Length: 247
Image 1: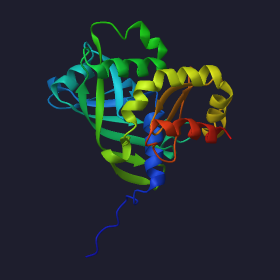
Image 2 (image 1 turned 45 degrees about the vertical axis):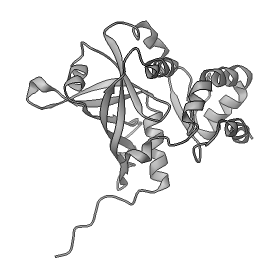
Image 3 (image 1 turned 90 degrees about the vertical axis):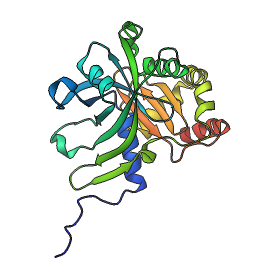
Image 4 (image 1 turned 180 degrees about the vertical axis):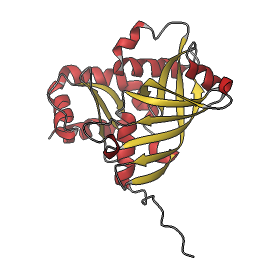
């Protein structure tokens, strides 16, 4: 008896890039956690999402919410991202990431970094980000499933989603000043990145994130991801790359 054909396609660079864009351009996602008081049933809710400097998704949640209590009891979670768009929602790409949910201590250096990056994506969350019952979780990817549309299913590893570069830390340290410089002194270039490379319609586009693998762009309502062809390995590579993308 012959084996049944696999429904999965071989994971290639195009699939990896699509998965990273779906994850890093998401403003929100559906989070599934295991609710301990329900006998192990999954509990799904919508959460705002951010991205840490290494590409791991982060969420800001209240200690009073059901999903937070679930994550504190069992760190296993899944995050679904992808905009359904117009027409048949199943014809649009989506990504499910299985994660290990790591609570971020308020006293840690990671908290300050994640908070700053999250607020640039979601400025309205400044109203409650510092409430004592609110806190961040890093959703460390373990594996992922990409559905790029009908007949386009792929299995991905954590390494396919995480940014691996020796420049991650150094870029994080200069990110705020680089973003301010781009938004103030190079607004035309920022608009070009959004409308040409990300195919967005006109808007007041700003850079809200810079990491070794790309740029996060927002007009206040929409979020776009410009993914570099390959992660930069040194901070000195950033300026010439941004100039090249503008030409």
